[in-house]
Image 1 (spheres, rainbow, N blue to C red):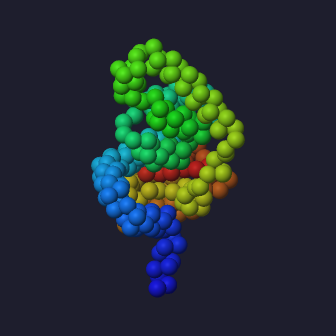
Image 2: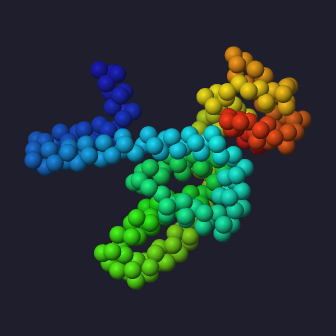
Image 3: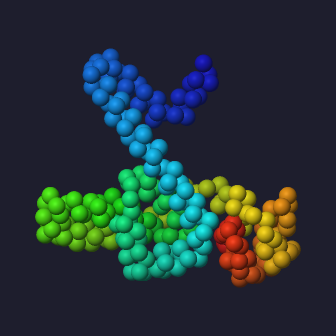
Length: 241
């Protein structure tokens, strides 16, 4: 009984949804059946979309260097970063919930909060397929005016969010909080490039590269960045303090 109560406490939202369905089945069985059918439809859609999205996040994490994200979408990327984020959101595919894991990955790789807001907002309201249908049913003039006003609002909202919300206010992964230099073992192929470049910092263990100690002030950060860049699978994650 205790285990059941603890499970309910940990999954309160799911428990409330189940309770709502139960009440609905008692009060209005017909509407409850329709609700279940709709829920199953969206669940199937999620199961079709999310594997692709998770694969994309793995690709971003493994193959796009952190320095590239910081340069083009970081806090100092300026208008170029804004327009790149706007294009990324506008040319995206899939429902808006698919944008959240991608945004989380980009944020962890150095994208600014402003650009994440722009990606999410443009993904939600100005995707290209949506604009095409809008022009078809409401006319191109309506679509164009709404697009201009919406883009202006998105840019302003992104700038305000960047001023109000800071990255330290967002939930962070435990690994990011505890380590400044890590090797993602699932991506490491044991090539030994990092060990050859900095044998004191890196070592081989069970055919995988490992970090022997957290780099301190005496370890040149530029040399560590070079190992990050040379890693063929981008398995090294360096978060300088």
